Image (tube, rainbow, N blue to C red; front, side, top):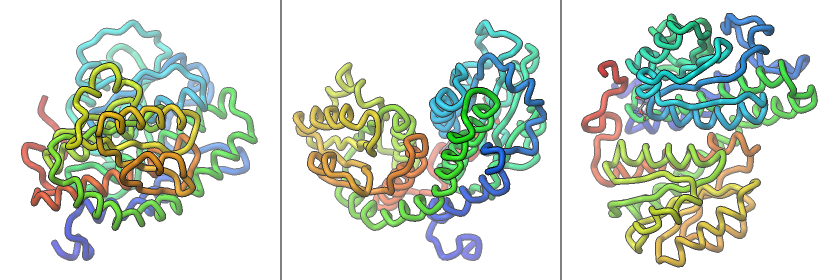
Length: 368
Ligand code: AGP
């Protein structure tokens, strides 16, 4: 209804704009400066048990699987734990060798996705401990996992997941901090991470100011039939997520790739009608991604770049630039996801698509 939409034309746009608040809600009461760690009420695992984990399997579907990829990079960095990300639909039928000390972490907005539930049950059957990151309180997966963390993002109505994704990334960063502080991570590093997390909602607020430019860029490219989304390291999962958002709601073919993989095949797709969206905030791989951008430009492909406020070099190469605030590298997927969500939204609206209820899709997939 109009009341629920709060003046927004679609739930998706409303939920995109809720993100500074939903991210605050994900962090509320969970960052403890005295011990320089994140605290959770419902893990149901002793510190001793968490320290003895030898490996983590992160499992999910769709957008939640993209959040899992972000989580893999963060957990490896903060906690130095081996992490693997598995599509739930694959994990449930695989039988990978695992020690009893391998922990399963299921990630799901709805808590009802059948493949994620089946993967959880299969891993529990084999004696593994399990955690879940869910949004919907009391959902099946939230109840069946041994412990877990809620997003507290409020109901997500748009079929295209937006606020759940950014909150999943935030919770994964906090979980990585928690695990890291039980292992190698110093007090000082823990405090720095807390500061970075606390600065995030404001950065996301600023990232929402890209709405006008995202609409303008959408107008320029909404007639294209193919898009590429490219990023590296922490921004590779964001590339996948940007491509999925566009596919889901605008029905435009889009592919996400790690930028350097282009040369191994997909670059053959590049022509003047195939825009590449580069996610290229400054960081360890910045120069490398710039080189990848040049390769696309050399083949006549239009380049849209998501860059930092202070960026100079990527902006020189790209045809269109969307600027977001600079944040710590592991938080870049959250801040850069915002203009990607907005870009997909405006393109879909311009093409007359049903943004909140795209064809062929259900909000949660409860049949195999
Ligand atoms: C995202 O925009 C999707 N519609 C879809 O990929 C979704 O993320 C997936 O079905 C998983 O849902 P869940 O998080 O509720 O388990």
